[in-house]
Image (tube, rainbow, N blue to C red; front, side, top):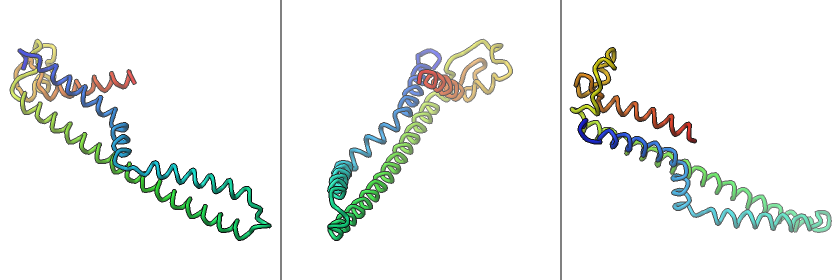
Length: 170
């Protein structure tokens, strides 16, 4: 791995994973809108409730009590129905968000495991041994090459650096 640009592959995959992680809320939001089409129906119900409230305000409660009471009950029934639709949509959005997060984390774990599996025996790069003297074995894990930087250490460093850069940028 030290001969090629595999360190760049690891850095690129870590950067890609972190960028996708920042996009997860918008991805789950778009997916829930695609699969849950009740937003138009909710909008229609809101407009209908507003129209009925306007009509209710134009009716005299003293003169037309029966009509006023019927319309008020209809508004209350429609409002309750709207609340239950909004609640079910929110629950659906939470489920979609949860599924998207699980899928993301599973794919990220599979990517990291495959990178570790592929580059297990060779170091990412080789540094002079005196630069990393107290932590030489830990940094070289799993390759065991003296002065080498192993894939696991490189993944940890890349994750931290990319997260700090994205935090500073965003």
